Structures are given as C-alpha cells and as structure tokens.
Length: 81
View 1: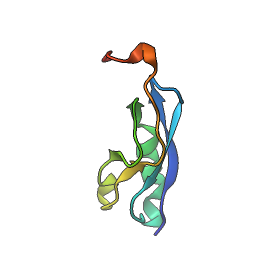
View 2: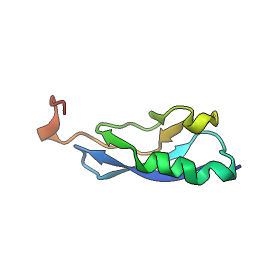
View 3: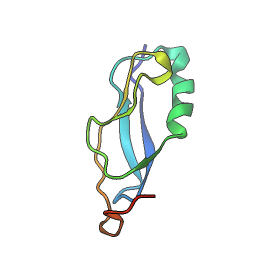
View 4: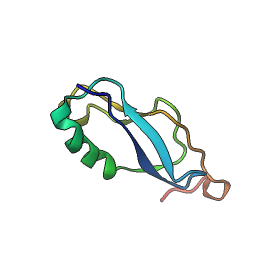
C-alpha cells in the first residue's frame, strides 16, 4: 500500500499544474492504473487545496485530492468552455 502523489494539468490558471495525492494508501499493483487515470484528467481553475479531483479512484476507497491551489486568470473569469 502506498500514498500516490502526482500532478495534473490545469487550464485557465496561473500555473499549468496542480499537485495532488491520494487521501488513503492504494495497493501497489494499482498505482500505475491510477496514474493512467490521473494523466487523463483535465482540470479548470480555480482549484483549492483538498478539492476532491477523482472520488474513489478505481474502486480503491481512496480519493485523489488537490494538495496545491491554482487561481483563475483574470481574462478567464466568468467564462465557461
């Protein structure tokens, strides 16, 4: 069992990536499949610490949560893609 840490891409933000981690340990054999799910993730700013980005990833009982924050760029405020 391991805590998974990584980053994910963020659009419309002051930073291109946000840090994330699992809130519970994940079985070692599921780490790479979980990383595949995280690589497919595309987020929109703003993102706040402890936002749940992927609930119950691969039915492990662990949520993927943001550990950093990103802020929406001024020119993107009020827009929806």
